[in-house]
Amino acid sequence: MNVKNIITSLETKHPGEKEYLQAVHEVLESIETIYNENPQYEAAKIIERLVEPDRILTFRISWTDDEGQVHVNLGHRVQFNNAIGPYKGGIRLHPSVNLSILKFLGFEQIFKNALTTLPMGGGKGGSDFNPKGKSDSEIMRFCQAFMLELWRVIGPSTDVPAGDIGTGGREIGYMYGMYKKLKLENEGVFTGKGLNWGGSLIRPEATGFGATYFTKEMLKINNDNFEGKTVCVSGFGNVAWGVALKVTELGGKVITISGPDGYIYDEKGLDADKIDYLLDLRASNNDIVKPYIDEFPEAKFVAGKKPWEVKCDIAMPSAIQNELNGDDAKTLIANGVKYISEVSNMGCTPEAVEAFHNAKLFFGPGKAVNAGGVGVSGLEMSQNAMKLNWTEEEVDAKLHQIMSSIHVACLKYGKQEDGYIDYVKGANIAGFIKVADAMLDLGIT
Ligand code: 2IT
Image (cartoon, rainbow, N blue to C red; front, side, top):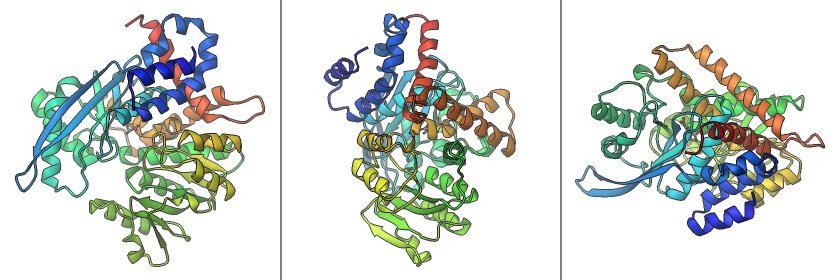
C-alpha cells in the first residue's frame, strides 16, 4: 500500500470531502507498516474495500413547523462495513451535517466498534436539521418524517442506529416509535432507548464514564490518578456531562465547560449541584453556557473562545470534530498539560495530534477513548436479544472491562521502542486487524 496514492485517488473520487479524507489518512498512516508486512491484505484489496462504504442512502425529509410552514432537509445513512456485525452507529442532527462528516464518522465507527470486543460493524447517519430552538412537536414531526425513509434499511441484525450530537433519548423515542409502527416488530433496533422500553442502565452516561475510565488507565500506567488534577472539558452535552460526573467522583477538578457562545472557567471546579444545574440548562434546549455565571457568580465566562487557553493537567475535548487545533495544542503544551483524552470523534486536528506526539505526551484518540458509548449500546443489544435487563452494577462492570481491554489493545500495538505509547497507532492497528482478518475469512464481497 502507498498511502499517498490511495489518498490522491480518493481525493479525485470524492473532492471536497475533507473530514472523510482526514479520517482515512490518519488510519492508513498508522497501519501502513503492518499492512505491507501482511501481503494477504493487499492480495484481497482490503484497503480499497474498507475505505468505501458498502452503501449510502440519501433521502429528502419534508416536515411542517408549528406555524404550518413546510421545511425540507436532507437525510443520510452510511452503511460502512458489516464484517464483524450489523452496521452500528449514531444519528447526528446538526446544521453542519454533510456526507463528508457522516462518512468520517462511519469510518471511525468501524474501528471503534471493533475495539469494544463486541460484534458490531460501522455505520453513521444524520441530517442537516437543527434541533435547537424547535418545539417538542416539531422535533417529533421531523423524527417521524426521517423514519419514513430510514426504516426500510435498518433492523436488529442489519443496522442499529443510536444517538449522537442532537439525537438524545427524546429523539430516539420518536424515531423508534415510528419504526415500530411501520415494521411491526419489537426487537430493539436503536440503542439509547428509554429504560421503560428496552433501554440499558448507564447508556446515557456511558460515553463520558468510559472516557474517564480510559483516562484513568492512561494515568495508572504512569503511577498517577485523577486526585487533585485540573481537567479542561469542552462542550456541555450528554458526553461532557458524563465526563464531568465521573471525573469529579474520582477526585479530579473539572474547571471548564463550553458552548458555541464561549467557555466557563470555574476555578473551584464543578460539583454535584453545578452538574445538576448544567443538566437543567441543557434541558431548556439552549446550548449557550453564559447563564452559568448568573447562578455561580464566582465563575468567569469568556466569550467566543475555546477553553484550551486555560492551564490544566488533563484536556478532554468533548464537543465536536476538529475543535482543538495545532495552536491550541501548543498553548496547552506550554501550560504544562500532561494527558489529552479526545472524547469527541476526531476532536483534534492532525497538527494538534502531531504536536502532542512530538512533545511525547499521552494522547488517547477518540475511537478508543469514547468507545464506551457504543460499547454500552452493544450491551443494550445483548440485553434486548436475551429479553432481560442487567443491573447498573453489571453494566458498569462490563463497561470497565471494555475500556480496560481497549487500553490493553492500545498498549499491545502502540508501544514504541523507546517505551512511548502511541495510542493512535495502537487503536488503529488493533481495530484494523480485527476487521481486516474478518474480511479475509468472509471472502471477496
Ligand atoms: O460516536 C459514537 O460512538 C456514538 N455516537 C454512539 C454510537 C452508538 O451506536 O451507540
